[in-house]
Length: 275
Image (cartoon, rainbow, N blue to C red; front, side, top):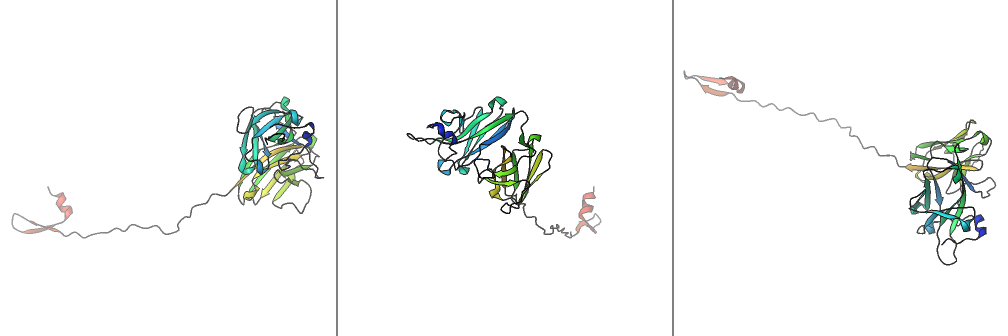
């Protein structure tokens, strides 16, 4: 049921109130995702756990009440949506967007029922041939106890903008150039001042898996982190190898009677050599 009012566009979602960008003053900002034209991309949409069974969709338009539904979950098209109920998240994926595709989009959940509005929050896709903010890889993986590195790139116009590494689920952000005792010491961010900053996460835990974003100024780029258990190395036995034992048995000689009536002792070897 796609029912909204004009003021719903400022309604920041019932889907756990999750927006990617968290400002310093804790204000809510529109997620502005940097997208490279002509290249594939993917973004996550989070929703409340109670909506696991509800149908999810992707909508385009500035006004919530008049947005155009482009795709439903688990359907293919220009945009492909995949629902992960166990994680309370669905992803929106595309292969090729052009600069003309820039605009407002909505992550939405169909609630259903008479006079009951759907739940959704909006974001803005900025499609550029050369994005102002991008990442070297939008998907990284590591083993429990190990570490990963993410390189975030930015244009010269964003050199003096605030740079952050944010976890989308709990809205926790780590900032370049600031000291905060509440921040996890396992996350280190360094800005080279030459259009890139690097995020280093050490001592990875399985619970670190999830979606993050490189945030520079008002632009964000999502990054998916997957942490797995390290592969177990089978035990190698240190026992000494068994040396085969060679058993030698003594063969009794055989007796042969000659024409003269005398006895001769011959071995098996001699016997096979007789003509």
